[in-house]
Length: 291
Image 1: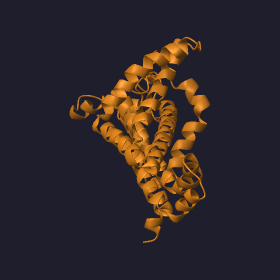
Image 2: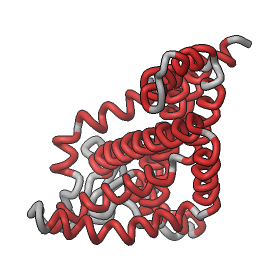
Image 3: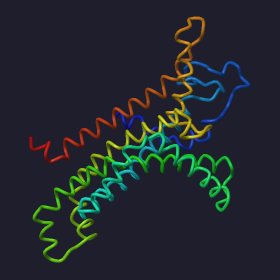
Image 4: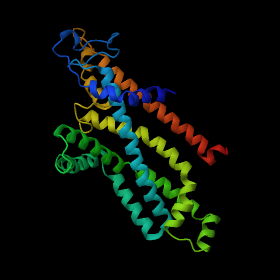
């Protein structure tokens, strides 16, 4: 319920938030860094922009990137782990050693390397052959780079989980029967193994979404993710953190709303998604339900 109350307004209000998130009123002193009021329920920032509209658009961007990146990670991890577990032998050993090597590399370093190598290429492609405007191509390239970076390095745990499930399933009698009638390779994988892995995939996909959202917010907080003026909950929280030193000095005014609302929305969303994932795991995991 909490998840719907947060996610639904973010996506439903997209036509309005896209047109209002960057409306600046810095020529009106009373509209700059104004606290929450009836006209602006979440206040305004240093440029007089509505924090409410920026939080709504930032939520849509963070949730969209999280869902898409989790989908990429689940797809890669499921296919990689299933192939590794089904083929076994040297193929399995080689694929799992690759996963071990990827686990040993720092996550942020991988994301930065992917971003630095992919971002310029995407900008040139979007502004060149596709003919998009410079601002649009820059923003689109930043979002796509973030999707590829998060999804491309977040599939490792999924691959290990699926491999373990496939190693267990391939010894079951129904798999032996498919081999006895001459079914081999991809047919066994797509027609017999994957349908029996739907429950595990759904559970881990649900748990992967909050991880992807948190990673996007963390990268945006560091300035690597979504580029301004586009907002995300991470970049909005980064702006709000600059107000923390004001808490130690009673002579300075604290603009608390700049930090409170993005962090509150992000925290509630992550909590709701994790609770949803735990609930699905309890329902769909036959080993848990049998206890």
